[in-house]
Length: 576
Image 1 (cartoon, rainbow, N blue to C red):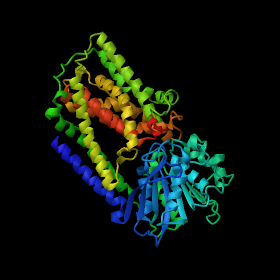
Image 2: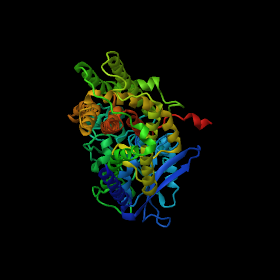
Image 3: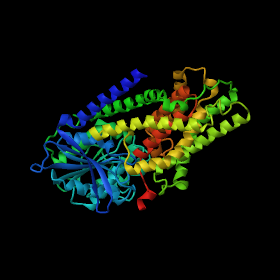
Image 4: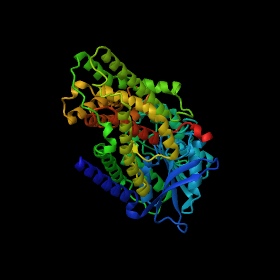
C-alpha cells in the first residue's frame, strides 16, 4: 500500500505541474479566480485568463466562454487555454446555479448578460472586440448576453448549441452577429437543438436555413453572409459527440479560427497548433493519483487505535444456492440499467428540485439509487427468509460502536482527500478531471446541500454493499473479488452505452433518442461504479463488515454529485 500511495502522490504532483504549466503557457498567462455581485445581488464566479500582452495601455480582445448544463467553468479550459495563448482575455464563466455561482440555474439569462457586462468592464479588455463562445446550454447563455447587449460583441461561436431553444432568441440572418456554428456529426441533441433526429441532417432543416439566410442545404465550411455587415455564417461538423467537443482539436480549432478572423488577436497561431490536451492529461494524472490514495489512506487510518472498532470478526463463508446467486447477480447487473432512464425521468415529476432537495439531477440519481437499492434489499429479505444468508454473514453486525467508528474512519479518509483537492485548487486553480468526470471543492452552500443528500446516498450504498459481498465469495482473493464486483456494477452501463451509441455512430440516432442528457450522464457511471466496487470490496475484506466502504462511497459520490451538477432551486436556508 505504501508503494501505491507514493505512486498516487507522484501522479498528483506530476499532473499538477503539467496542468499548471500548460494553462499558464509557462507563466505568460495569469489565471485568476474571480467572483462578483450582480445588480440582482447574486454572485457569479469565473476563471479569468489574462495573457501578458494585455494591459490597460494595450487592451486585448476579450471572449466570454461558457460551459454547458451540469458542468463548471473548468470544462471550458480547452477553449480558454487556446484563446488565451493567442492573446485573448478570456472569462470562463460558471453559469447561474453551477459551480460557485449563485442558484438557481436558468436565472437571469443563465448569468450571460452579467458575465458580458463584467468582461467589457475590465481595463485590460478592448470593448470593441468581444467574442462570445458557449457549449450546449452555454450557447444559450451567450445568446442571452447578445440579446441583452446587441452592440456589445462582434462575433459568436456556438458549440453543440442552437438558437431559439429553451427561451433563447430565434436565429435570423442578422442575429447573432457573425456566427460560427460547430455542431458535431454525432451530437446526441440534434433533434432537440435543430429538429433533426439524425445529426447530419441539420443542414437541411428550416431552422438552420433561416439562421443562415438561405433556402438551400447548408454546406459545412462555406462562408455565408458578410463580416462587415455582421451577417457572416459558417458551419463546422467535427466527427465527435456532444461532450466530445471538449476533446476535439477540430471543434476547438474551429472556434479559434473564427475569432482570429473576426477579432484580430495580437498573437495569432495556426488553428491546429494546440496544447490544451496536455493540461487534460495533467488533470487526468491528478484524478488517477487521487483515486490511488483512497485505499492506502484507508489502510493507514484503519490501523490506528481510535478506529479499531471499525474492524469486526471475520465473516464465515457460506454456500448459496445457484438460483439465489443468479438472482443477486441479475439485480446487480441488469436491474440498475433497466431502471436508469425510467426512474430518473419519473424523478422530474415526483421529486422536482425544491428548497430541501435543490438539485434535479441529483434527485434523479437518488430515486434511481433507491429503486436499485430496493431490489437489492428485497433479494436479501427473501434470502434471509430462506435462511440462505444471515445478517452476520452479509457483514451487517448491528452494533452502534462499529457503525460509529466506521463512519469516523470514512470521514477521516475522505477528509484528507478533500484537503488535497482544496489545496491544489487554491494554489494552482486546477480541479481533478478528465473530460466529464471531475472532482472539485465545494462552496459553502454546496457543503450544506452535500449534508442534506448524505442520508439518501448512505441508505443506497449500505444496501448495495450488502448485496454485492455475497458470503460464498470469501474464498476469492481480494483482487479477484474486487475485479469481479467492479465488472458486475459497471458492465451493464457499458452495454447500455453501446446500445445507445452504436446506432448513432452508424448514421442514425440514439437507440432511445429521448434521453440524450442521461446517456451522457451514464458515461460517468462506468468508471464511478467500478471505483465504488473496488473501494467497497477492499474495505469489506479489511474490516469484515460493509460499513466503512459504504460510508466512504457515500461521502465521495455525494461530494462528486453536488459539486459537479446544477442547483435548480434556492435552498431553504437562502431565505433565512
